[in-house]
Image (tube, rainbow, N blue to C red; front, side, top):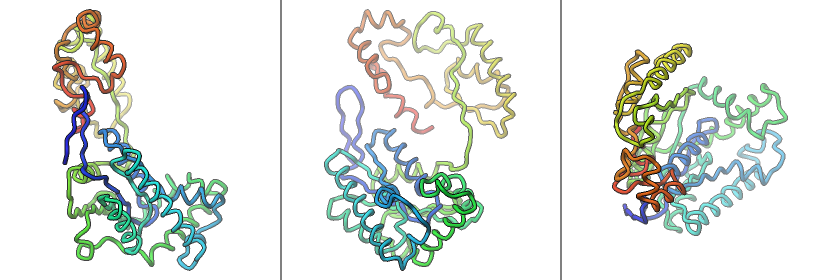
Length: 353
């Protein structure tokens, strides 16, 4: 792992050479969902990442989708087109990782045969890329059916079909892959780096994690949820220092802040949320806001407001007068700005959450 520091913003180069993430699995196993979530996460932690969905390349090549017949293993024309699309996607992967400053590419496709995966491995070796496979295995018919209804029915492939026709066709498409599917094997593929996600996270198999970025990928994939859930983000009530216009500090709630906490409690009660979990920072103002809810809460240091360093407890007017250059830098990029002698940017501070 190499760490590079540039200017006042912390930029971490987490890989010595680019990484190619390759999805594996039958259709309707959540591969594209995983690819999108993983791509968003890695970009969020400042690792330049891009997703390459082979299905999109196929739709650009074949404008009108007719039926599952296109995916039949004995459909030579279909096989030829799908191979061309995969190669076109890999060519774009090469350009992104070699010429465009990318560090991670996510190659989103079924990749269900050992032959296809060996082709990808050779491609990576020729270009100096590391390969990490992400396989999603699911045999639960309810989960598969739900995935088809929630995701696949909205696909451009089925814009002109009713629900019953689309489900029937997609189930036949899955059958086209099942006979030739060769899952990653603990023995045959023991030299490969991969994670196998079984039954939507009920069990995991992790093999030969080689570097920091792969360990980050594994950690993230073992902690994501694919079932819908609601997350409420709420600021604390007004604090005493808010009234004075000063940033940072650790003051308690003002009178208006306490009224806000009561109103928040009434709102949460009206939502009838089951298994409610409340997280706060370790600051007095957030703890006092949470206490009004009358439910257990958990304090996280990672949720603390970032330390303003030399500007702590100053008013913005005072910062502008004493540190005009810093005031201008913060105004230009609040997301990445770091106060002098302050803590690192909030993205890195809150990753554990």
